[in-house]
Image (cartoon, rainbow, N blue to C red; front, side, top):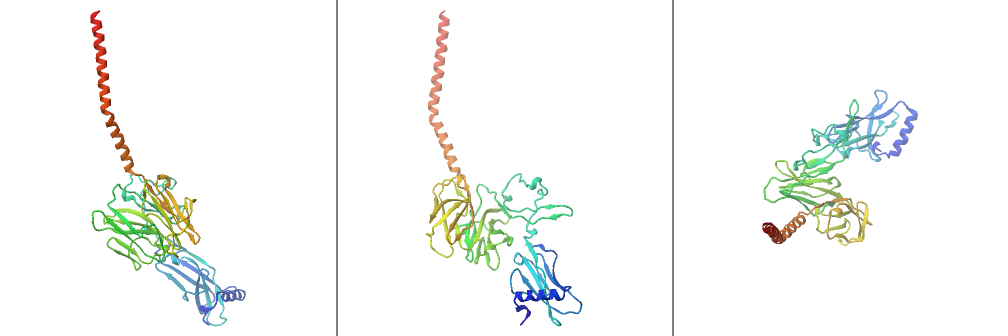
Length: 392
């Protein structure tokens, strides 16, 4: 039987035996350049046996709690390293001659974070008071995904990159719309969906861009993702496709960012874009294991139950207080949370202004007649007083 086929428990027993017979012989894992690296770097793990020279060794590697040996090389190299490579590693060394003893190392953790090169440092953000960053004059160009990092001490210790936060700056009349099909913010894994940039002026040059925790900032193009013109199609989705998607022009302007969530099991069907105040909002709960649209579920807003055991939740007249995080629960699972934004209707305020103006214009003739009559009365009183004075 090959050493790589031995169950881990036998290797552990052999290791305990070896520790009692040869205490000076140990296996050790070293990681270069560091145990905490960024995605895209080159990382090497090496297994060394502290033993007398001339001994021949066979190596093996384990990851996490797996019983399977996935490599028999003395060195493991990840180039480039990804989040998939993160985890706890241990190695063993087995003598190929002599006592054929086995020695297993202690676990060493490899941590992989998002690549710092994906981030653009904002020139005036360094060492802000209390870690704050202020946008003086907000514009469309400031729309994007923001993260932060910190440093302290001497020598300087740098923290990891924070979670990402989408911040949107929108104009009154954006020249392009991001269309998602199926039209919802949550989608099932192992399925497909598409996004397209529809320009009102039929101009070309638009492309779909995205930011995900797994892949960072990128265009929509790879083996499983294709982009034809301004349309991006993801044929086989995974949780790593969760992120922010938007339309970008040739000049680098960003429009209509949308949070897309990929989830297995139960999802919430909610609108892609903000709901206008006064419109109707309809939410449904969908289960990946059934095609039925009559799925009964409980609906929550900001953690509070608002409707239970209903096939759909309908808000006939949406207002600003309805804004918040929504999700649904079903016996088969719970959906992720989706933020539903409500925009204020400008048409209502315009109608109010027009109504006020029309009311003012309607009463203006009456006001004018009243003023003229008051003026004439005053003239008559003055004339009467003057006649009395003249008579005296």
